[in-house]
Length: 303
Image (cartoon, rainbow, N blue to C red; front, side, top):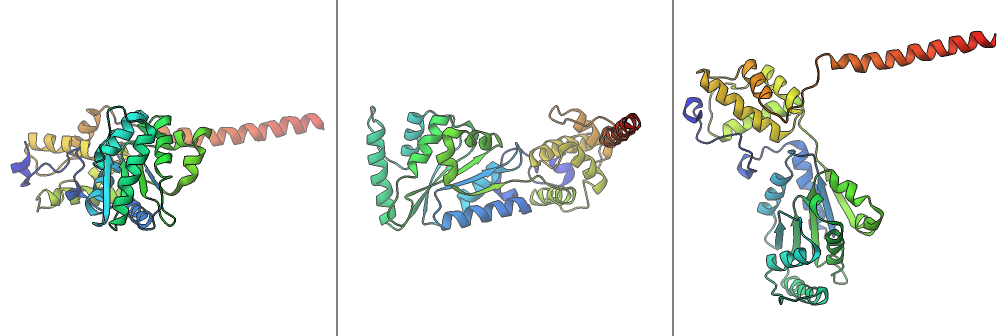
């Protein structure tokens, strides 16, 4: 691979969320601030949404790593679970023993006892669910019932939902309005702008051990931004491919042609047709001309 060629110790643009590469984009920092504020204030439901590849799982892992010690966490990364499976998954995470034929009543009693024991020990429990848009409607309702467990002053269980925008669509359904009303803190992740993308790429190379000049120039990063639209995952995919192409030609930096080839090789890059901007200019002009013509014709007809 290109590690020795660029003087780095590990691959800087892998797709696995790695908190050691956390850059601290403004949108990621703000999301973490919202999460920490909400959890410290004892809110029942918190929601973070973002498009595919914008860093939800990375923030989720960052949160798990940095929560204060008094938080007991239960983490469910794959929530495509029916209500029964979800109950058992939560019970397993909290080390609650259930019988094979445990019904909802037994689960509620045992989980509540566990939560009360944790609360008496001065700790709080937070359930973190990644890819929450995959939760069936019935399981989302189970989530709401979880947060009914409370003392006179505080929820015994807080729930953080990470999901794609489809989660918002699901929560907009009338049968989930009670759950929707309980989400008191939410945040929607933004994509990177062009300048953030440039510094993001430099940061990842630096963490990987690179100490030279720019491997990705601002000109190349502009091409990268156009294709990736500022989505971190797509930036990683394209940078990795571009580095391999530069290495193959013995170059010490990525050229524009390398990035263009990487983009061409990536199915997920939906490049806008050339001169698409003309469409956005032409349509309003045509509408304006048509409107003037209509008024002229009708005005002439009236006279």
